Image (cartoon, rainbow, N blue to C red; front, top):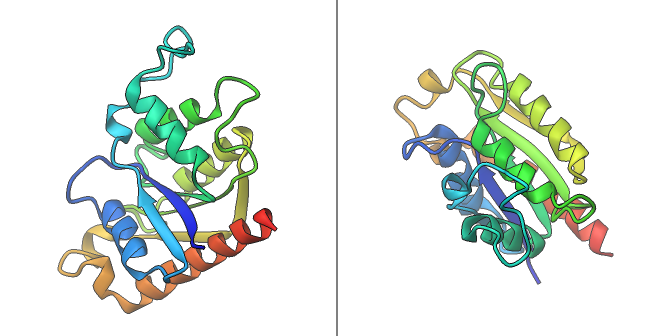
Amino acid sequence: MSTKVLTLVGSLRAGSVNRQLADTAALTAGDDVDIVIFDGIGQVPFYNEDIDVEGSVPEAAAALRAAAASADALLLVCPEYNGTMPAVLKNALDWLSRPFGTSAISGTPAAVIGSAFGQYGGVWAHDDARKVLGIAGARVIDDVRLSIGGSVSRFAEIHPKDDSEIVEQLRGVVSTLAGEAEASAA
């Protein structure tokens, strides 16, 4: 049985390096890990308790919750926007954490990785995302960290899948996260 890792990408841009990182993780994960990239994050409306009512939850939000409920682990691939995580990613976590007491990610092993233009690779955004994940009830795997700086120059002429250092780091992230999911299931 394979470990299912729901992956949320915080950039909606088609050519996003962070999307390329998620795709590379999916391409290079072992046979025992299934990386599922949730493509509907941009269609999830901003969280509003008035529309989070049983029987009328927006379809995209319900699909996000269902994807999280069926996953063994959660991987956020997070760029940094103005020193923090993108609103689309924060919004997804808001939907996943509610209604109060029924978080779809409660106890789920989770990790945050990503890349940004700056030299630190988005560490502020990644720290903020870990904080939100923890408050939302996920079990954040703090020792899984991958913040790739200088994405504009590093990946100007090469896709992350063709960067052996990045591929090896992604394999390590996915392997550790899958191991944590297996340990949680045991």
